[in-house]
Length: 308
Image (cartoon, rainbow, N blue to C red; front, top):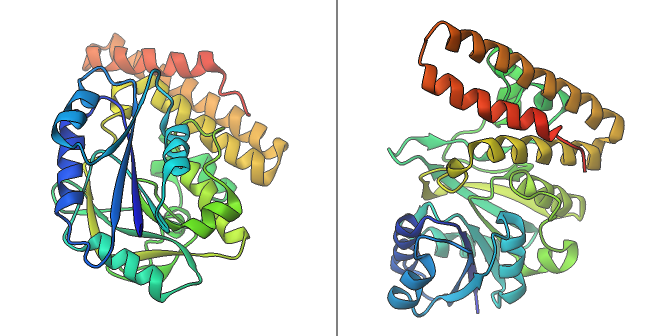
């Protein structure tokens, strides 16, 4: 088996159907392909749809929501391919992307992980190539302060100096679509399940590079990523998982003191956001939206963003 495509699904049956149709329609000759879908106890008839419409798919139907990271590890344990691809259910493969990524890895044995050029639904560029985050990035990214971050810091982090169609070494590529060698998985193991969601691919690429593998962004192949449709269903948990994953990464690679400093800063940010949203709600400006955000931010503060 040349390629195992692993998809973790939770309540996005229609998007999953489009994703699978794109994978099955993608020319893969002369490569062989298997598809593994790990379904996290969906309630939208995803398993039934898979059994009736895609009998060729290896379905791992879970009795509980196992999360993105553990779900991918369950898929990796079943995979038979010499390459594995982690693919979000809200993506669609464009043209010969899979075959070209396999060919690229065949031709470049030092490359352990490759990620494609990702497009938004409207065809515009989606930023998925990255350099490793510094503490400055950790302080600014996904907070109200990001708008005030020095442009050079965020541009370096997002590798904005590279052309979108370039083929270039990077530090990591986002997990919405990435292909890895089986040898990488055998050497460094699966995803770190301390990351329930977010930053797990950052950590995986970090470990791969520490083990001597190259990570490459391949701008010549494309997938479309419709973006975050599973996580949109749980807004507060999305914030909590994102920030706790960030903190776990910084504790793991930069130490507990840095992680605790970052934790305090993030909690202060959410407290400040509550004050801002509360003031706007009192003034009657988009009050339903402000109240929804207040509830989400309060849940983040209540969680304490504990560092694992």
